Length: 338
Image 1 (cartoon, rainbow, N blue to C red):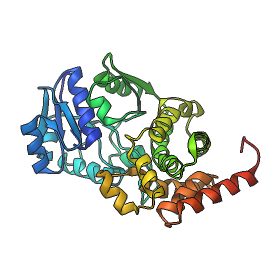
Image 2: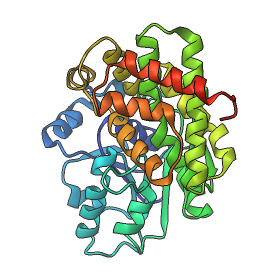
Image 3: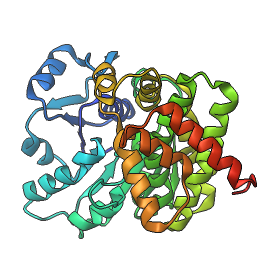
């Protein structure tokens, strides 16, 4: 890249993306809100808290001052939890005195905004209406594997083909394949719903229901995800691709997934608070379950798996009761295509 790219968010995924961008070449600036943590990363040249043993390339620079970071480039990649996304955009707008027309923006944030039900690109249009170049980076990835340089494939979907292509090029190496898509709605919905469904897969496995039940959760969950996506204007083919089925299967089946681990913990009798402390990072699926359920209610979309996950994480019902209710409802529903 000819100009630096700023990565906002120094958690595991933001750090992994910053490392990957730096591998491709050019200057990368990584900012995080914890100044002490940023100073430690600068000394260690790694993020030992979230990505141990993943060394920083020389062209990856650590910055603890957001104003200084944003002053260096128009190219910004945001990687923060969904509940912080709007606040970051508002801070960027303030730092730039409202001038965002030249901004080239991407984000790896997944999930509906809890208060409004908006997808991230809709939040961008709300906060930064004059920003015309924006894209989401999504797909089946675990940060530790990206940080370690293991083979990975992701999807970039944006407001226009040219910016999506350039963002994909900024990430692409022989071991990191970046595809582009024009379906930003579908890609974002895939990323939003899969985290909640992964809690369901963890619940099923934690209760000892076995591989048959797990694949049923994944398959029927994909049907629910697609149903919601189509109602919101997404393209059906997106949900059988990397950002749909690919991301869902990965998140539901591997214990690197914080959301799956949350489901396992809840099935063992732990509280959400205790499980979250044990996991040690934000578990997006907890908030996603509520946001997706509420969006389905607004649109009158049938999502029985999401509904029962919602009852577990929001209403606190026993996971065993939730699964029994789900099985009863599904048997009453009958046809496989329902």
